[in-house]
Amino acid sequence: MPHLTLEYSANLAGFRDMSELCGRLAECLASVREDDKPVYPVGGIRVRAIRCEVYSIADGESVTDAFLHAELKIGAGRSEAVKKRTGDALFEVIKAHFSEHFSKDGLALSLEISEFSEAGTWKHNNLHARLKAKHAQE
Image (tube, rainbow, N blue to C red; front, side, top):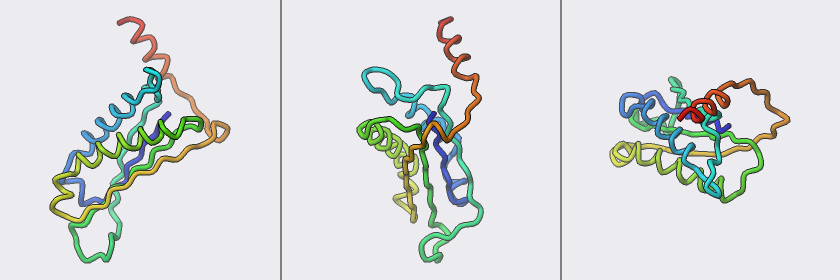
């Protein structure tokens, strides 16, 4: 697992392709390594974007002001260095994706990482086995 949820103001939807951003962020998560091993199993990566139709930003005076908040949820146990490296990499992808918009209009970008206990989650996932079998055939 990592699950990354993007919440964004509806006025960003026409500016940049959110599907493209989700794909880049998934690739970014898959590329994080520690001791030359992936930190996050590909079968557990989820990136989703939720468009917020109702919102208020800052003083509410500019209809072009926009936001994107990313929340990454990961299982407990990863080092602070790995969490920082992950956050830095994800945030660079997000900032690059919106750099043109940032230079022209009001834009608030944010990212947070939260950990949860395995005791508080339930999972039923056959993706890991499928990916393992796929890579064994290559």
